[in-house]
Length: 74
Image (spheres, rainbow, N blue to C red):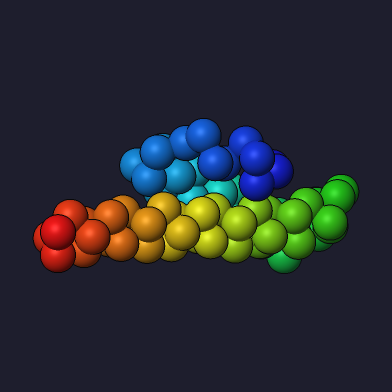
């Protein structure tokens, strides 16, 4: 998942993607523990995707809060 793909999503959609990714990571960890996981790099990739999603959420929430402050002070 690329950052460019995430920029077009709303905060609600990003939070849904975060939940889906966390669920996938949970399942990957179980599969890894059972020794059935074929692609170990997928765990790392999903963790990085979650970090990207959280970064985009904080950026969007920060810009929304800044916009509210600007209109409040004007």
